[in-house]
Image (cartoon, rainbow, N blue to C red; front, side, top):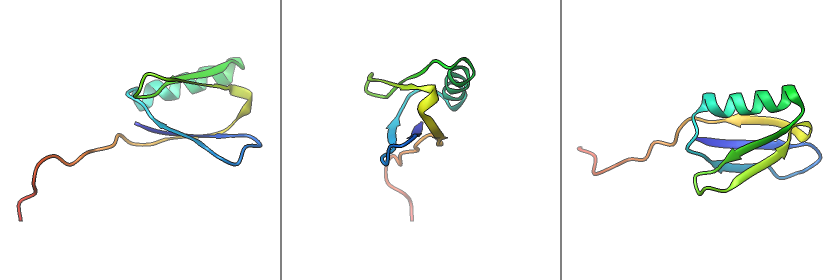
Length: 74
């Protein structure tokens, strides 16, 4: 799953991939924003991305990346 987080007053976005589902990511972000806590997500390399919910400008939760396997028939 590809994730893009926009941080207030920061020009660059935080972009990463995670093994978590779109529903899980959405629930983590919604709970953090509702309770004014930190957003804590884990990328596909096991690193934690921690962002204060009050600093979040936007979040784009993309679709899962589909990788082509094998050779296509013509």
